[in-house]
Length: 215
Image (cartoon, rainbow, N blue to C red; front, side, top):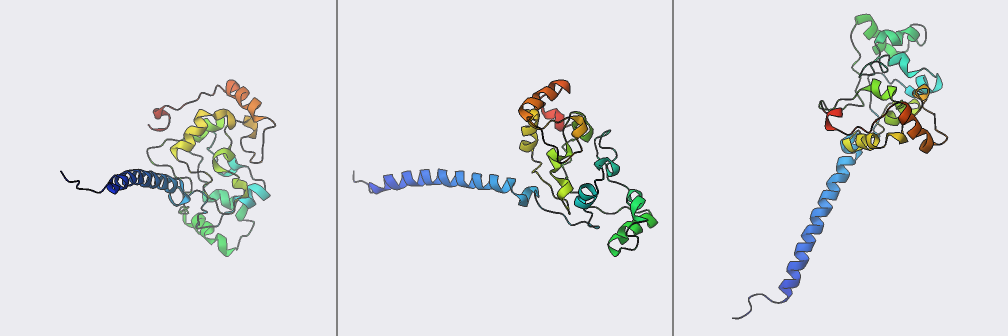
């Protein structure tokens, strides 16, 4: 029986099969990169707000404690968005006529909320509790980055599940003394020694069960 295909077809078929596998792997790798990029996660992208509130000025330069605005961060799941009255505690006296702050004054006069753009916005199927993280010695900076150096706030990390699990599997790398929770500039002298010691003191477990975050 005469040969239907030339012998070179064998080489071509092998190259095609392996080439297809490499192409598929490249596509999967590319999709993984896109999924982790700021295009999807919004990490590193400063968000425009109705009022250009500067954490760098208020928390960094003026040294205002996080809890002055985020009053519930130590007690409940949500850190809380400050009411306009909190802003007016100072701005009824300072920069009273600034055009930039007119939305704040209008909100205070009319009793309407300022439509802030949420930066750290987790999916509805994810449960995150600020108070338990604060109680267990996880500082603001671990999740939010050096927010005291940001003019307009951006999301420091991806907030994807793999990022959360990395901390839950290795909490000793992030835990700090409770008195330093709100100190953005704090650094441990030797985290490798301090971390495990605080894990024992604060009774921290490596919680990676699904129901910890998905309830």
